Length: 246
Image (cartoon, rainbow, N blue to C red; front, top):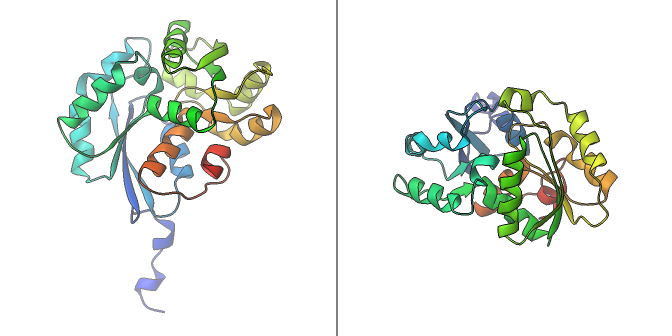
């Protein structure tokens, strides 16, 4: 065996197939481990942050969007992900603003969280959904309006009323499971657990089994969309039908 063959390169994702750059709310420590777990061998994740800690105007996260874009472009990533559900669903127009501002810095293709949500729902033909979030009600209301703009009806919605990102991340996976079951609706085509900083990916498989419907989360749909946009069609087990079958 050569010296090179003894190196632990198989355990390290250097991005030999693709390198994805992601910009996150600064408080978010949940999205990176979840998305990394969803990426197949040879795909790497590279992160920068935008200041957002909760309790204020979420749109302030966009203040340094161009700076964050340049930092990811410096790493020569293959795709850039703008990853915040609440901000990207602030209004139907905001996705275009995010894309156009990133385009002033780089021509690297962009995935925006809200686009990924709509794409995933479209893939399953899901027009009627249940929405569960950690958010305050005004943010839930914005998401309901955003989804309606894209032809998606929210049959039932609930926000846990948590004002801070840290508080959101501290909600256990078990509680998300219980909350989703309590929102069961026989008319729903799918269930969407919205927010990039919650422990929802842990329970996708269990919820799909219990509810008999596809279950989507913010981190799951973003990972799916960026992989498929990059031409990587690997089936990823453990995080629901979306990544396994589509």
